[in-house]
Image (cartoon, rainbow, N blue to C red; front, top):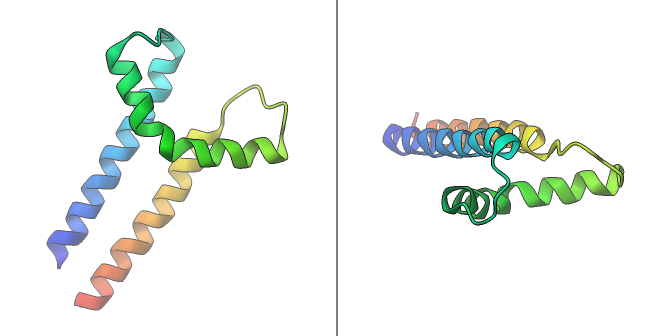
Length: 91
């Protein structure tokens, strides 16, 4: 079962890296015709959009998008919970 926990851990690593790459590229690449950036947005938007909508409910005139930070924090808690559950049922 530790292999499943390790796979979950690696999956969350990939998600983190994709979100961080999107943050960095958003400062430099704003061309929607850029295929790599468009793919990155398509992959990460389902993760970031719910957090963005939640933040906009509380701060409607938000000028800086803090959704990636909130998403990474929540994903980190989710990662820990899933891995702990997997290791508890095995252990």
